[in-house]
Image (cartoon, rainbow over all chains, first blue to last red; front, side, top):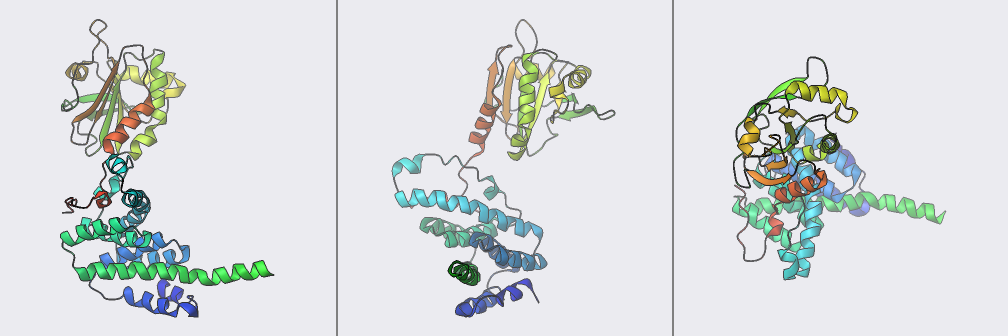
Length: 184
Length: 179
C-alpha cells in the first residue's frame, strides 16, 4: 500500500469527499508525472500537515527525481515568503510600496533544477493555497504564456485545493482529541 | 584603478590555502570559481596588525558569503610562503577558509590599479565581481584603515536581490519570460 493510500484511510468520515478526491487528483490527468508530483509536494509543504507531507513526499520519491522534489520544496518555501510580501503590496496598492525594492532574496526562483514552467506551476499552486489574488493572476499568466493549457493549470489547482482540504481533514480528529482532553 | 563595469583582469596566482602539510598551496586563476561571485580583497602586508583582524572577520563570515554563491579571495603582494608562514603563526588565521593569493609579481594588483603610489603595496581595496567576471562594486581604503565585512555583505545582497518572482507584476506590465 502506498503512503498516500495509508493516510487516506485516516481521514475521518466527515471528510470522506476529501479521501476520494485525494485519490482522484493524483491519478492520470493533463499533467505530466513531474508536474503532478512536483505540484503535490509543493502543496503538501504549503498546507503544513507533517503526516500528509511525509506521505506525499514518500510516494513522490518513487515517481520522480530528487531534483523535482527539491524544486517543489523551494517553491513552497519561497512562495511562503512572496505570497505574504506581494499580497501586502497588492492589497494596499499604494505607489509608495510598489516602487520600493523588496530587498528579499529569491535567487532560487531564477534557477530551478528542472523546467522553469513546471517550477512556476508549483508556485501557482502554492499561491492558490496562500491566497494572493495578484500572485495567482501573474503566475497563471506566466505558465500559460510558457505553453501550459488551461486544463493543466486547472488540474494543478485541483491538487492544491484537495491537499489543503486533506490537511485540514487530518486535523479534525486531533482537534477532537484535544477537546476531549480539555473536557476531562 | 578599475571600476564598476570593468572586467576583472585574468590572473593565475599561487595561493596559501591551508596549514596542513602537503596541502598548503594551490594555483588559482580567474576561472577557478566559474559561475560564482567573487569577493576579492587586498591588504598591504602580511604580519601587520590591522590585517589579521579584518582577514579573520572575512573568515568568520565565509559561510554567509558561500550561501550567497560568493567565493572570498584575499591577496597581498607577499609571496605564498610568507602567507603560509603567517597562517601558521597567527591563531586567527590558522583555519582561514579562503585562499590567500600571492601577487608577488604585482601583476594583478597593477592591473587592478590598487598599488600605493609610494609604498608599492596593495591598498585595502575590495572588489565584488559577478559570475560573468564584471566588477560590480569597488571600495578602497588607505593603508591603515580596516574594512567592515558586514558592509561588504550588504552590498553583495543589494547586488543580488532582483525581484525575480512574477508576483512582482503590476497590472498592465509584460510578465517575466519563463523560457
